[in-house]
Image 1 (tube, rainbow, N blue to C red):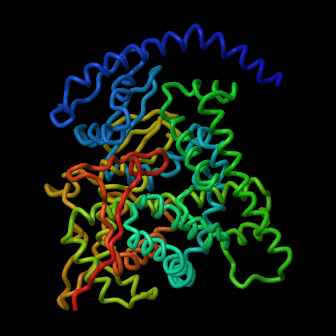
Image 2 (image 1 turned 180 degrees about the horizontal axis):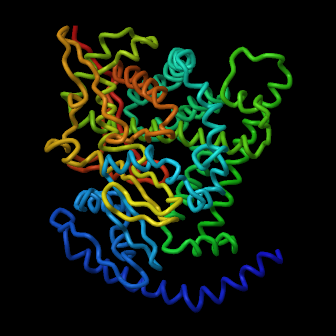
Length: 517
């Protein structure tokens, strides 16, 4: 308490004599920008680089775009020389955004050691993610990656597809969809997919079944808390000055009070999983199968807080990324019946409950998923902190402590990478015809298509994610049609906190598919 009081003695004068005047200009400018914005239509706006002002930088410009900041930053990257844009933050701080594949390779591979998660980002997310793999650098990150890598071999993937995913699909998801079809019920398909993915990651990584996918649409306390913790933690990055969220945290007010409550709920849930696994390991001499959590606990790192952080990171990775990818995939299929017909044709060539090798061989569906994530990536932005002064391949000078963000969303929409037809949903851009008449998948290098990151930190669960998505797509589309209920011509809004979402959910009707003989 004494330390907090002393900190506040320093912070309060600083707030009133420096921060308050700055905020005055922010809100004044924000109001005038809002008035100007009403005078123009989004469809006819001219895209130009933002003006930069003393002290506040380009803060007014990004505030004016509201929840379109991903799209606005994408526009800035696309019109900038070398697809690299320097955004000027308040108090003279700079933040580089890039969509240049050469620069992505440079920061994720060539100069990997110079572009890390960094102390700033780790501090921002530490209340929520602690030292979990997605919020760690150095040896802490290396250890977690090494232990987790054992979970992604062929044997584990086969078990995941043929047992975990199949059981969740046939015992839970299909009955829910069949009931919705029979009752002409509208479902939030985004929520359904999140529940499906959450159960799966818990079962394969922790051998724990939360049983979250069930007929009741009511969300659990944990799910609500996890969503709130994700949102508030992400919004810390958007504060004009880090001091703002730090003061709110010190005073335990506003969003920071909500975050503290949400994080407590999330951590209690994760600790319950850890304690149950510790109890199981103690009671049994050997387990029938070794899951990732058991490996961590058996590696000598049994500190409860450390392992709890690991659990939370993997829930974030498994629950929100694949569900985000599938949400937009089903939306795009509904708009592109030709592609849906090709995907269904491939599905019908497989067994009713396709085994691992059949799922792996779903080439057209794989390409369609890649194409969907090109346009709507589960993680639209990824940021690194510069450890030492450097010059990027684009010629941009970066100083120690600066953020460098590669804009995945922008890269998926660049004509220089994908051609004039970049706006089309076209799985064939990932395929070539063999002499046998079959499709062959032709991938892009991970620096051009960094949806799963690239370099030493490339996503360990990439193949597991694809296998889960393909098996789910096959299980749903063989029997059902997913029909969005949004008005014709209305485009759902893509936005993101740590991972992307469809704003307001994805309301759909489920129809039983009638197959012609």
